[in-house]
Length: 270
Length: 81
Ligand SMILES: Cc1ncc(C[n+]2csc(CCOP(=O)(O)OP(=O)(O)O)c2C)c(N)n1
Ligand SMILES: [Mg+2]
Image 1 (cartoon, each protein chain N blue to C red):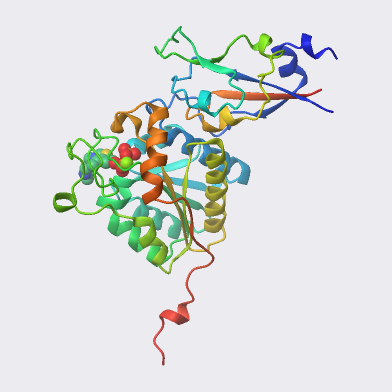
Image 2 (cartoon, helix red, strand yellow):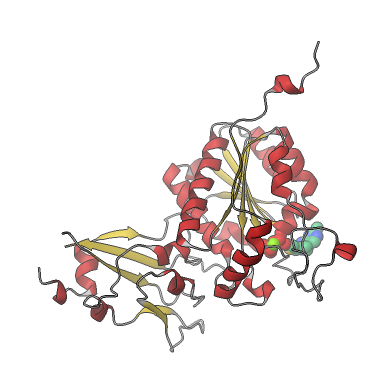
């Protein structure tokens, strides 16, 4: 074959398609801003559900936040929850339908501030669900206000001079708190800024979903994310800012990978 | 030695021109168009796809671009030759 004469059409016709849009991702154009991490994570969730073949038994719970419309994009059953309550709603769904696989998809404002109680107790009870937690250190949907996860010094709409510890308190490492809870079996922090990190994040989401299917308690995947609009940066610059500022405080990696705690350790002695 | 030729097809109407794929490409075969799509975005595209087949910097079909794309608008093909 004279490779110099190969055209793009030849490669498409004779070659193999190594990447295609997952079937579970609907044709609707996502409303997210260009370069938003939500889009990548939606795609990964769609790919994992497709690969595990669990489309029919999956029920997602959407939060309030930019991902409020997740039900428009992934072709599974969804339930909308009010702000922060996704873990409570997911608890109800999964207890009534033990044969279903239930996951929540939540932002940092949703999960770590208004819904801090719900996520703590769901994880402490060890509900057999998976949680996808998009930490972009900001309230993206409402215009970029400070979130519990906003870094000290980070400029947001409500901290125009940067988050100040005297006025605003410390950023909350909620994933570290969740890893302490006995009901969780897998707690990890991932990111989606490079092709390598995206592939790792997909592996983590798959593990979390498999754990929930195997009734191993709660699995929790934080994705350190960008909100380039809220941060007022280009998508490329936002990724760089995240690497330089978010990763030192929110280091990527597994915090816990095993089983729920042994109940004997939590029981009365006699 | 078997060589891999790759190519990508970008749904330029779905592309929002975030540029993440351009940074993810190890071969630098993608760029943002001067032209805009119907949504008004400068979309990402493979400049002269047939010319790149002969270039040293040709596409290797690694899928890095598609992996980082938030709008899932990139398909990747590979041909072993
Ligand atoms: C009960 C209630 N309080 C406040 C709001 C306003 N509100 C909508 S989204 C949001 C924050 C979302 O931030 P986050 O969860 O981080 O999601 P993101 O948009 O950043 O992905 C708030 C406070 C609301 N919709 N409902
Ligand atoms: Mg947020």
